[in-house]
Length: 316
Image 1 (tube, helix red, strand yellow):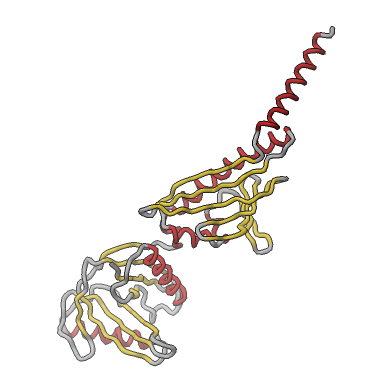
Image 2 (tube, helix red, strand yellow):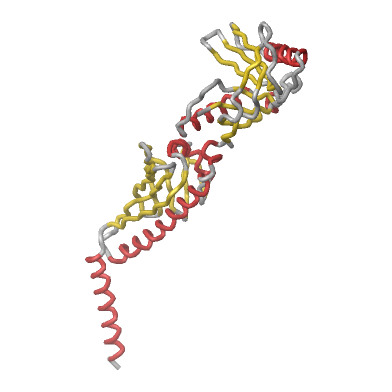
């Protein structure tokens, strides 16, 4: 009659002894760390991650905004950007009774390879029951870290997502252009731009040339009031030069960074800035003035939001 009671007592004693042993053996913190590699440009990725408003594009869980600050949630664990250092982002991380800092570190490797590490230390309480709970949570956090890094790399392995733009490295498609330029004491108007384009078109026709593409435009601010304006049209052969209009040889097959944009002047300038960042990130140098390829005739399409423009930057 007393044997089962004795067994229960022994079981309880063994269980308590095990918990006490765990309390003495287990460390006071659990280091949680996940690492993944990504083929991407370091500067381009860090620019994206510095803006927590962009995280919702790839974050695996849900994102909410609290007091104009993004709260990122994965497996009921909340992350919010606390501090940004060079190639390091520190998060305030919490879940129920757990609150600590976690760090995303970006390490640049040769040939545009990156090592991304997400790490933290979870405090482990002294009492056995809560120690075990903390270790279970640390295991859950490690899985969350893995999912976060996997989604990040899957999204940003596409260069288009690094620049919010599809940027291509192509070759100069034509060999000759007919071109004219002038200086202006004000920002050139569409009428002035297309008046020059009209001059070039007449020149090409009168000299037996054939247009091989759309008009090309470069408008550069020299100072507060002065602008340099140049237009050109690709042609099939070199033509005799006139007083104002020149026939120029282009380095056909040379390298060009290119992207297409649909939109007004603000959209066009925004794309130019992104291409300039791409050129800087990839350690290239511009070798000639950039130009806009005017696919849409601005005089025929009054809605500037519908203008289609190809941007070209000659580089080496």
